[in-house]
Image (cartoon, rainbow, N blue to C red; front, side, top):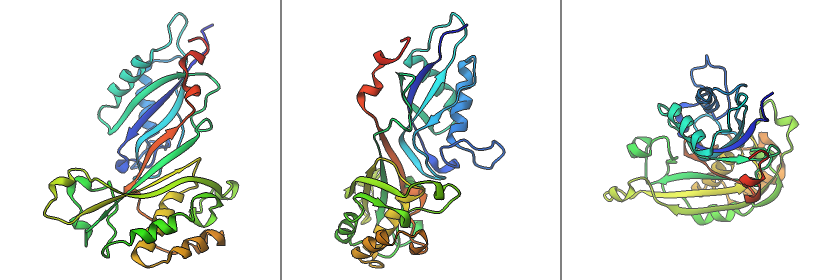
Length: 292
């Protein structure tokens, strides 16, 4: 009988445009999930049982991740030592090479650790580009990496005022898209931080002849509802455009009805990045892993 499987936490990133999202999908779809590629790469490890990636944070079609997380259990045959973190990192990345998916780091963790349920919080970044009258004016190197809402400059102070209504613990029913799992999921969520700050674009200092402005909406919470971040950002941009007043965001929150969300203002997927998943450092302590 072989020894118990080793559990690892991996942090990974991906350019989301060509995937159906992070979660596994059927392989005959036109777009498939990032998880499909991760598990295909893991076949190279030749474990004695199939390896499943338990993803921390779901991301939708077209959404990117600077750093998502997952845990996986690796069962090796009798007499074979557990993989080192460096071996795991190297092998997975070797087989992911054709794809814009990279494992950033690997950590041996206790068997009680869970990438989703052990997470303390998740941080998302939404990138906005101002100064483009038409989507054709978005720089090539920013395509699929930001949202350039048309209609002139945004009233950022009004957006910042509206953002404060969303901070804290609320029923976010109005800010979630309805789908098959919605009725079984509590709409109560806690937003720890929501900031709107100027940012730098990729190669932006070379666009000197153009008045382009980059802004980031940074949102940190314990967890999020389906498309909650994109709906919140869309509402804030609508405030910036003058289509909504700041107090309307408070009213939308209070009405607690997904059908009350104004049509056609949800932010597109392309500007959204999962920036990080935060854990308690003690949970990542390699020495706590059994059999380490």
